[in-house]
Figure (tube, rainbow, N blue to C red):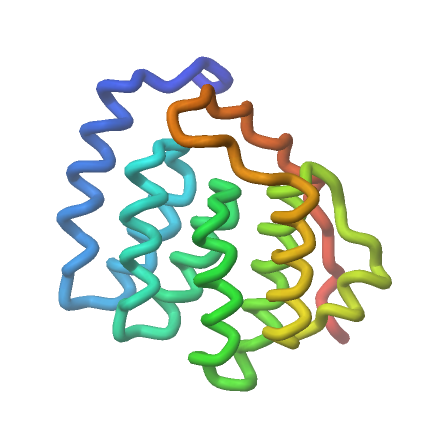
Length: 162
């Protein structure tokens, strides 16, 4: 049934079952839960992912950030910027890559290579980008019909380093 819309009842059941595994003792299980929740396009899945930003495992927090980027969730963007402060320096480029994906999802268009380079792994630069974005594109008022999510930008293929 590839390509068919998902059954909302099945999505809700998947969310309920996955949510139970967010407290699993194994961080690898929690990481895979974050990945799966990133695939569910439900607001409640984004809420669970936001809670996973407080996980004790750095990998789970990265997985939650990647999942929330797929949702294009505004509060999730700010949490991901804060993740740049809370993560090992070696992992900061991964967070920056998630922020690029998230920013492109929010604005519905790719960032220029110059923007990506300028923003880099700088939390203040990303915070400024987000503040400018919010000024340009204010959030819909509560109760207003939600706009359709921006189309995902084309995937970037990165050749492995040699």
